[in-house]
Amino acid sequence: MVRNWIEYRTDAWVQWCPGCGNFGILTAVYKAFAELDLDPKETVVVSGIGCSSRIPYYINVSGVHTLHGRPIPVATGIKLANPRLTVVVHSGDGDLLGIGMAHFVALGRRNVDLTVILHDNAVYGLTKGQAGPTLPAWFRTKALRAPNYQDAVEPVLIALASGYTFIARAYAYHAERLKEIIKEAIKHKGSSLVQVLQPCPTYNNVMTPKWYEERIFYVDEKYPDYDPTVKAPEERDRKIAEILDKFYKDPNKIPLGILLRDVSKDTFEERIEKIIPGYLKNPPGLRPTDLDGKSLIKPEEVFRDRLVKA
Ligand SMILES: Cc1ncc(C[n+]2csc(CCOP(=O)(O)OP(=O)(O)O)c2C)c(N)n1
Ligand code: SF4
Ligand SMILES: [Mg+2]
Image (cartoon, rainbow, N blue to C red):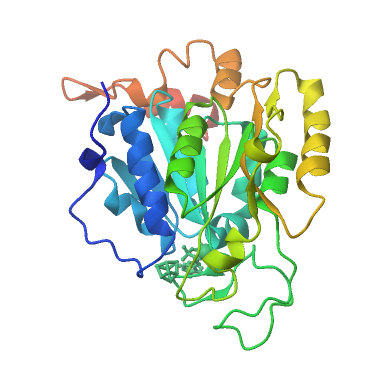
């Protein structure tokens, strides 16, 4: 059964500026969730703080609007408490790659089965247009008094270096292509990154739709033989070298599509199962905590080794 995507809409007024790329991302997410037939009760959207992070209010699944930079740790906790949930992180470039960068790297190292959708407008939209971590050096957007004199970070390369097992880039105005990529990212078992290039017509007057559309290309169109799959750990470095060689030679071109799909690694949940057998069958979030009014959690047993003896 495929649900109607309208079921995932809420009644909340969508508070984004006209033309904002977040609308394309939201549309793609509704349709991806519907086509994957995700049960709203078994799906959680977790965001940080920013314009993009308002998204949990607009999607009719469980949602948590967390602190600036912290959606990944909160999402990790939710997923590890109940690995049967589908957990999707939505946040901005400032949130995930500035204040939240350590968590972004840690997620790749762990390969928790989460999908991260990075709304990348290269500015801090909510706080009125300061330079975001992905704004190239010497670009001067309209809120800046001087050109940006920091270098940009490249989230795809950081994700490759950190261990993410699914890495893709998309463009917010191409909602159909974005929807297909989001579906693949959610289906993948492990940490997935979808970097979405997102025009911000209010503050980013340099990286406009025209600017993006002159640079983007789809890897499956330009290189139809390219296979993003990594099947064994020793193939990963060779695949990264191929990505750099094929897609990163021309700094004026931006590759879109699925760049890496690494099926060679255990997820974090599978690693926990190895050291705590039975965890996947009986994870903490599904264990009863109360029986007939009597708590099943006995602090004196849980903390037995840590009690300070008088
Ligand atoms: C701890 C903390 N520091 C700073 C802020 C102020 N702040 C709110 S949103 C934001 C950046 C938003 O940029 P981004 O994550 O790129 O999201 P966008 O608005 O562009 O979607 C900042 C710095 C905050 N809310 N909390
Ligand atoms: S400020 Fe930019 S990112 Fe924020 S809602 Fe407006 S157009 Fe979108
Ligand atoms: Mg931003």
